[in-house]
Image 1 (tube, each protein chain N blue to C red):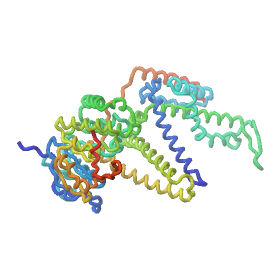
Image 2: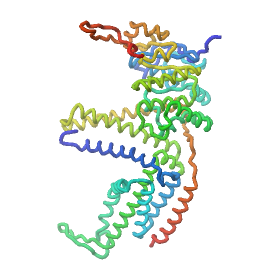
Image 3: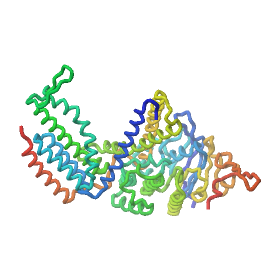
Image 4: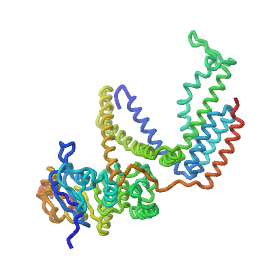
Amino acid sequence: MAEETVFRLEDVYFSYLGRYPALCGISLDIKRGEKISVIGANGCGKSSLLHILDGLIFPDSGKISLCSKELKEDAFEDMAFSSDFRKKVGFVFQNSEVQLFCPTVKEDIVFGPLQMGKVKTEIKRRLDELAFVLNIEELLERSPHQLSIGEKRKVAIASVLIIDPEVIIMDEPTAGLDPLTTRHIIDLLTEASRSGKTIITATHDLHIVEEISDTVYVVSREKKIVGSGSPERILADTQLLKENNLVHIHSHKHRDATHAHPHLHIDHHH
Amino acid sequence: MFKNNNFIERSIKGALIFLKQAVFADEYALKKGFLQSLDPRIKAATFFLFILQALFIKNLFVLSCLYLLSLSLACFSRISPGFFIWRTWVFIPLFSLFIAIPALFSNFSPGETMVSFKVGALSLFITRQGIAGALLFVVRVAVSVSFTVLLSITTRHFELLRVLRIFKIPQIFVMTLGMCYRYVFLFVEIIENTYLAIKSRAGTNIHYKKGQRIVAWNIAYLWQRSYKLNEEVYKAMLSRGYKGDTFMLDELKFKARDWFWLVFVLSISVIFLATGVKI
């Protein structure tokens, strides 16, 4: 049986204010249960791509569909479709500050399922379960502004996991986090993937790409996909990574001799 | 920060200290004291009743009893009396000074002269009725401010917001207020960091005119940030299924303690009003 396509993007163009291009001719297929990473330098359009996948912005031209249903702005005016889409697709924003808008952590986490009309006893059960798994039980009654960056990120992830979406989209999930919290988040993603969820991650942290992806897409500064394939193949292609600002030439001394090589930032990861 | 004009620096510091104290005050709301254990709706309703009484009671002794009640409640709620008195008396002169001082004089409160003095060619007379009126007014303000502060420091801010629902304030308005409160702290952090960044690069040798330009530019920058944040937060809400309504997970429930407190407050209110309201 052929693998089911969840998202299909066909020649998608998007620009801000009709003047500043953010995506130029993006085409890709994402299969159910697949782990996808979108890598690229800052400002290459990764976040815009994820926003399009989450139905928050819409292409100027080209086509995007979820399970063969085209995602258009007017389609979201249909409450049944919109509600169904939000239950299926969860998005963890790059900036946790924007995602945590409620007065307390607990209210933030339950915001999504309450909006979707889920049963309150079930919401409470999921809340307790997630708080335990993410080790945020102590934070539930606190205000989001009192949390550290790592805690905010965990709460933002909890606010999406509680919806139990089929597709989890994450924008730079490990940016600015300490190694332990990064590890915790990668483990969560791996666990979510094992349970059959489709995981789409935008990152420029090459440390984590191998673990969180089956397929890697490289987006260039020209806002185009310039490479795709398995993480092993992409990470081995230093020329491609260098051209897209994902590696740099690292020069250092070994005794008296100066030695230079491409620095992938994955060499020191054990 | 800015040479010859530290007004802006003092204003920024003052605002930041006040807002940080608001966060710090949450610690009192988390203590296991008497008022903290009450349902926020009952607490707000009974405190509103106390404030109403303070407006109608004209007997200084009864008003003082109300003030003492607020102090006792603070003690039973594990609030340091020093902190509570400082917190309330910061506001009292602000609300009462400009009204109470003129009320001392015969021009506003004619009656038996207690003290007289001259300011230039102007003769001023402080009357007994004036002193009594000013004192009554100040104690009335003290009672009102004390109960307001007591309510705000023993109740977590999101519970206070939920209290607004009993006054039939639309949920969307309550939610917006909650978000304003939430994000004010983010902007406080931005202001503080901007202030430190300017200080680290420019030190204290900025001419006040340039300082004013920097501050104006920062106000514009902050406005842009808030506008962008507004868009992003809305997207984050949409992403989690926001449809224009808000819902609560836990509905508030009254306990036996709340009913006992209500009966107690109603009983003493009858006594206070019976003895304290004289025409």
